[in-house]
Image (cartoon, rainbow, N blue to C red; front, side):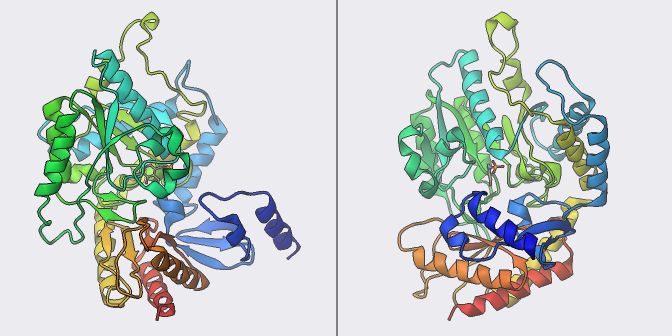
Length: 461
Ligand SMILES: Cc1ncc(COP(=O)(O)O)c(C=O)c1O
């Protein structure tokens, strides 16, 4: 108990938590996690919590999976860190080689050959996106398209919190206070489709808007940046089927690069290893992060096609090399974890497992949660779920929409608190309660989450 008091004090006075109102946070005793096992986190007071938000959406194998731990320990005993700036190391080579093979395997039925073969290491999702933006700009510059220096992004997009990544984000709540240092971007709609089995509502009008935005700026656009399959941070907004193919079509027509931000969706979160492989839409640049190390260590990568990569070749003195680099890029321990993650994904047939669990979760939510009068249409792709809370008047909101959504947001927080009381860790995004568990979660543990949520919803009259 002495430790508990000391840690509470340290937590309130010394640690500044991400995206957290510290004044409110300090009103409750914190959950001081000490260890993890499977999908559970154990705190200093010996309480067990189900990590139903997968430690901010990155957890694949639960906590302290013995094979992940072993891979990390073995690598740490050999080499903890050596820079990729002037040498290379076997851990990065193993991982990059396996990743490229796995991506190609995922896209093997695509019309065009997959040439996503060049892995650029960074530290997390935001830096993977920063690299993609700079890569696209420098590429256009080096192929002589000097005027192509703009990006087109989609409504409600989220690509991270560093300044470049924020600029290409569209959620105003996150960027308003930094408005005067953001660069301008063009934008287009992100048509959503709640039910993957129902035909999508016509997106003809949205398509016209996108086409005219692209066509109108076709000589200025360096790249279009999109989150395929589902926007996570926007409040789990599933993308209408076929939209990605349209994006690619117009970009292709006008010689604009396609960057897919799969920081959230890749590594089987929505089923396939790479989410956009479901529709066989190949990007020119692919951003990865979060689940890349199975949820154990920070790492981001940006994977470029041959055509992009080739534009960076030349003599040193030409300064055509990519002008970017982070100290810990390609950290060997993170690479060893990422290699083990890929091995387990294949061995455990994770894509198929996620599809099975996802159907189970869908049914449980349908029976026990969706009928609640304050719950809006549930959005789900794989094991990425958003449960929107409506206002008392029955109005539906979309995650961060500001216009009057405050009431529903407060209520979502109340439900989440009730879930945490039942030892299930969930997190709301605005008025949307998100469920993003470890991907190897078992059926009984999904039951635990859904039961806690159903019980939590009782706080809403
Ligand atoms: C689509 C997408 N891109 C980028 C990021 C940023 O990743 P990170 O928080 O690792 O910087 C996120 C994080 O949620 C994301 O969902």
